[in-house]
Length: 375
Image (cartoon, rainbow, N blue to C red; front, top):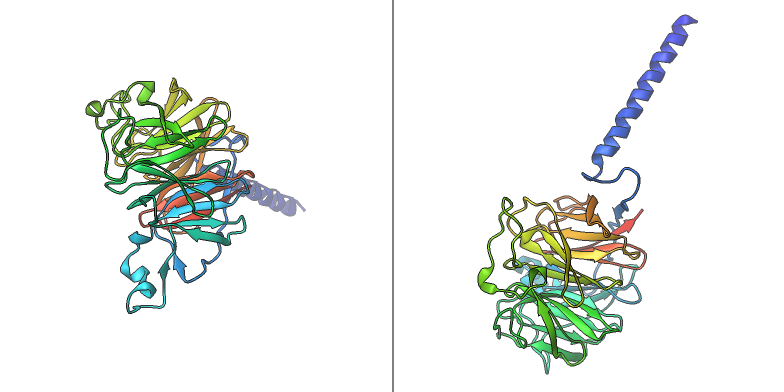
């Protein structure tokens, strides 16, 4: 009897020890800095979204992503950057059965079906050489920026692709304090109530600039800390020195509006988010992954539906950071470098639907869009 009790006692200890080990494994698997009290939302990839594209289509680098009023997902992608062996069915004569480049702008329904696709050169506007940022406003108008060497303009279309407005002109860049030109703008956010479009301007210029969303008339602009931008004063990021006084080179990569009037701006190569009021008054900033070099850690920012959290796309470190919006504290992250579902190459942009689902877009060799459902 004693032998039985002793064996049972030893067995229970072993089970308890194994349970502790498993518990610690789960903790270690969470993101550094993640709250153990469940403060940070947790996401799981849906590996079956979107569905297979029709018409033998294939995606190039996916540079922009947005959600419309129906929770439909829109992407901007770069069909001209597909390798020859990826677009063999479009060659003359065809070199393979797969594949044909998809149109630049694609709309998906929440289930992952393609609803429509359009885009490319047309009458009355200058299509960018290299598609970049995408935004769908509250009236379901579609806005697009370009990242080609001479792309210096923003385009506005209806949801069916009818051209409405062009701000700026292809090939005309006159610096960060010019009121009529842009310099490779990267991102757009629209306040339909105030009838204003905010532009992250961007990869040549070093500012946020605001225009009338109907006429394209200039309204105001600002640089880092709400001051006038100075293109000659831009310095290379150094993690051992104080944050730079100007937005970085090839850096003003996103602009996002919150319901309370705050404006969130990505200063990509300087690894920071700066927060402003809509008149350009500086509020605060946060540095993320300070020691990141190269293209930087802050590629895009979006908000949870209740605006409690910020989600930050980090292309270099290949993850999405989760911050509490009130204090800009990092409370978690998800993702890791790799090719499998839920992993990232260069996560360029992200969008959040009304249910809190996150959709991510990858450029360069990533060439995909992924869906992450909140658990």
